[in-house]
Image 1: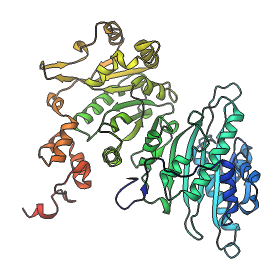
Image 2: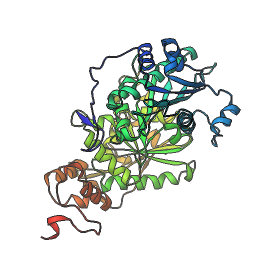
Image 3: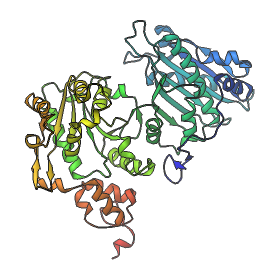
Length: 500
């Protein structure tokens, strides 16, 4: 049993429960037969695919107050307002649709006449695959709903990408996904992880990818949306998720579109002085690049799923400890299932053709040029590097200390296998790999695993290995098993420690 936040939060199962999986028709009929559920359906883009299930199931008059499809842009603007971005398949649009339609429910449906009704508003704005199949379908889905009469509503919003090669197939998927969302909100809201898993009832993960979800409202007060992001990757619903410093789940296109992306991968368990030094020096070099625009730089701290499983199954508390520090430092976090860097670069390339950068330490550099990681590719390492370096990519290599031979390793003396050395030399010659210069060599003796051990064992001295702000965050929030005195607001220690 896991939780989506601290001790005062909702209990959430992190494995699929033994719940009975109903078909979309069965779900729609169960909702229609519950005469306390009453609301509106607003769908833009692919027709009224979701509400069609409720009409066909029977008994829809007890559920549907109104259905609308403002397909024309001018009509849509007149109802919901103009989108400043000019994009209509976006989160802002679905939020405006929910605001408008739910407000009409409260305004037009008298509580005196409907004392037991639980109002809801469902909305989606979608674009299916185009005729020439050059644009993949995607859409935003939202549900605002009450769990009791006169209670304040909750809101669930998600983004989905459709992978089917035909618009009609995508229409069918949209309908099922919408029914799953509505049913889950009404009947599974007390188990947010079950609600999440139920979105794939009757759907295959090859057909649809859910890459963003957010749950807010009184019944989700204990839900940490960063853990929802983690669950999306853990359950294979998507390969990468992004969340902001304030813990809000973000859609990749909104964060990465036409950006100069710079990523640094690590365990960040915890963030150490060497992690921040890598980031700061790598970022300084990236800013000097000719094809990098200062106002388009997007820095990402990436944690791979494999990194989160370093001690077996994913420890959600451990994940939140890492996320709390990175978010407190103001950084955007990427959780991915891309163990190989070429997959990460391919993912970034969905959203930008601008110059990208990756900051790597010694182990990552050695893994990058290790052929065994590319055995599943027909073209081996050459295919992987073709994917990576056919893009406008720079690698920034942080030096490392070979303790066994007491040698400082840089790009000019890195132990690359002779068979791969010509490829390595080519990339060096063309300045696709650049050294990060280091002044304080003592940083190379700092290792996150050792810092973590010292924190857990109550051993002093780890504070000197992490930035001062990280030190305070760990102590104040008692992260990573820290069990010592807590700093007060004035920088001193609280409790008995102040008396000693």
